[in-house]
Image (tube, rainbow, N blue to C red; front, side, top):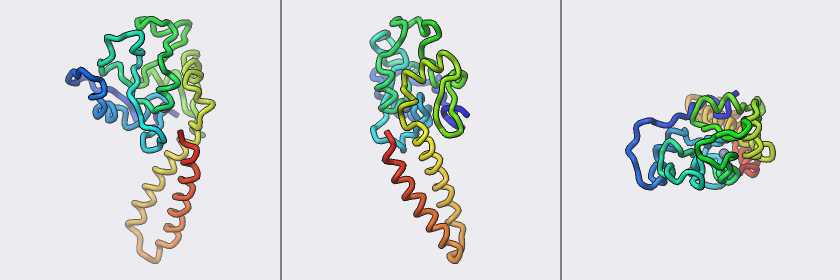
Length: 192
Ligand SMILES: [Zn+2]
């Protein structure tokens, strides 16, 4: 499975230039489908607000600070883990010995990282393994977050279904909805 599940992240190509990258937030959120580009976490399942990451760190390329094509909608944790990591220390050299980052808004991201059916993320290539380590996917509640996302999705479906039921059929569904709500609360304690 892809890290982003069935969502396709793609930056729009036509965008009016802005002088402060923070002003791109509405477009960036939309293009990233309200999801962290790196770990695929939805912003509704987060403890800390999402941020704007510079794919090529500002430290190595100040000229792309306000360049939309260099921005990644990122969760707080991924942004902290990536920080200004950039193996070559040179904006023009993306990889050193295949170690480096791949832009999550490109389909190429899927070649390097994959999500297992339990929701965890692992590197398929050397570059993917580098990213898996850099973002510390293994040590974070990636699997739990993915499962909460599935639960939230299912709960929405259940609520939709409940709208169509007769009142005598409702009893079991109300109980199920309550259980899901409880489970979601327990699982939410694991979120980051
Ligand atoms: Zn993330």
